[in-house]
Image 1: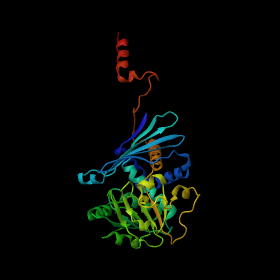
Image 2: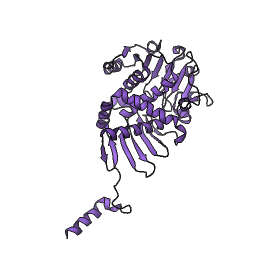
Image 3: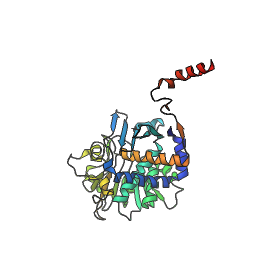
Image 4: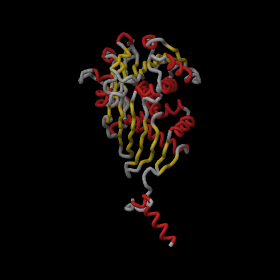
Length: 349
């Protein structure tokens, strides 16, 4: 049988664990697999693009399990009251090929993205970081804020979005989190000024320059999340040249990340090597660090593993017959109902 976790079940799981603890535990789970980076099969995700957006498939595997995520990115969906990003995923047993889990990954991707951002900041940002600017206050903003508040100790969010109502939504949704102040800013520059960490999570599929060179201050950590497909950026080239840039899977980031606008030999550093203790991250408190985040399959694999473990332990979700349960390993035809029907008729006679 395959464990099935749909959106209502995922909501129950989040409520049972508590959303901030969910993101914190997921951060640790993703980091544990990044440390094991060399054990995974790795490839850039496959994307089918058109003018409206992209649909992507993100697979990876180790010796024990295989996982993939189906995900889209359609910025114009919001004009039709549809989510810009949606996903689902499968986790399978490598020894048999049987699927262990089929799960929604829309809610979970928001938490996985926040957890990955937190993981990078924990390794790269200044340890005394308390103020974060959040540029783009849409569907993923709350998750980023909650994760950074819980794990990094951020106490103030300086929020800006071109739609002021979206920022007010963010303020309302974060009101219950004690010790977290949210300031509604009127421009990107106002939000970024004096921030320790800057997170950009805008949705437009455009070569944008949300952050410009004059906004950069010594010691800042940039968490560039929204630039995640060809033709879509957020950080100006002059920002990238001012800091030490870290990536997930370099062949993918060269095509999809903010560094797509840079020469092919532009120097980058691999985040997994920092987490595994093979390279240094931030060299001093004055250095600018940049995480050019595009999202990589190992993060989704880790999320599926976490969901599977928690859903089984907590009895949330249901078991479904996604693939046939063998009556006999050579008899698939019986599963059409014809073989079973014949057997019932024969016994009746």
